[in-house]
Image 1 (tube, rainbow, N blue to C red):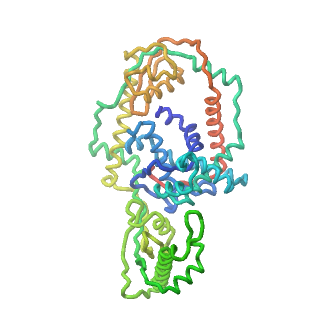
Image 2 (spheres, helix red, strand yellow; image 1 turned 180 degrees about the vertical axis):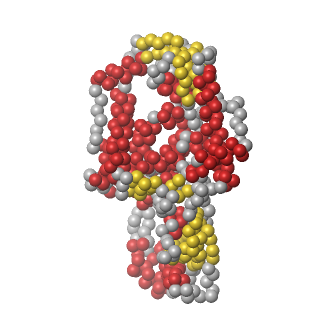
Image 3 (cartoon, one colour; image 1 turned 120 degrees about the horizontal axis):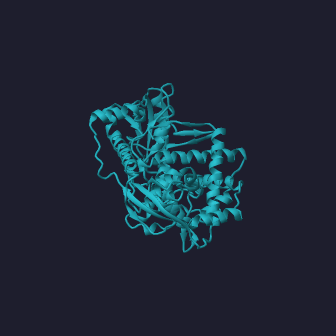
Length: 488
């Protein structure tokens, strides 16, 4: 199935993101180093829509977990690399952005009512089969998601769905009849499974370096920023009762219970003092920021140094994103809150992305080289064995009889059969997602008498996928796509 998904991802990538509303609860999966091109603030821009690193990481995580379910928990980073999962995630976001540009041209929007209605259908926010607002908040907090970010995600997916719904696809009786006939075709085959398990590869520096030289621009260092910064620790003051009362009267709408009712002063006291301390901390941070810009800092304020990049960031993503927008002509960043403390940054130097040396890139190059060489060696073995191989012979099987191939997993067998029944050759081979190659020889073929019901949904999905692929191709010509990230 997986290789079939890879080969036909031009259809499947669309159906995946059409059916997926904002990712919650599956666990976040990221990756290590990556390299920016000219614009470190984002990874791509499609028409008027920008794609951020956070969106790319979330799309990658979502795809990773989908594949992990297919592999029944046996999916890992090595498989993710072999599947080009990062490229898939970026392409998914690009295709979404193309549809969002189209939605903008139609002036389509998602109302608050539509957004709320969709969120209320999502079962992971239910308590006793009913949407629960507190559970909604808890689930988002547990997954480190801000409510506004999650709702923006849902709104975006709803907008994509609404746009595509303007372009309906219908199924006719002839198409149903054709699919029914296809599903009746049965083959008796002789097949043999080849794997790269016993293929030995020369991984000496001589051959590995030669391989690296052909693709060295795919191995870039990441952009890093040398900065200076000052820190304002959280204030913890004691306030007079009059000050607490005054602040409460002016800001009582800040202090509400779970039902939205304003808390009385005594119940809100702790929150009031906390808010007063937050305001005092921010005020001191802003004063220090102004003094820092004027080179007039007090002797008691220490200026520290740091080098920040995507993989080495002691602060958070927001800090990196804001620093990436600074320049040496305008190097100061206003105070930003990180874990209860305010930091003010001064950009000193930008270290741009450069090609890694062979030594620096070797750890990344090695698995790619082994994978490519094993793949080419396995295909060479398949071609050399094709005319003379003799494997196992099946009874008559159809494209849905994966359970009848006992010497491989149902997932791999299903994937093989889906490809087999699209072949126009009697003898050949197909590659499947676990890195194996299956040789086949069709001995006999016949048409079964059974009738396949409920084909309408299958035809509709196929037609929708093909229609959407055509739409995406048209939109690619209409909206310019710029990619600022390298090495995927």
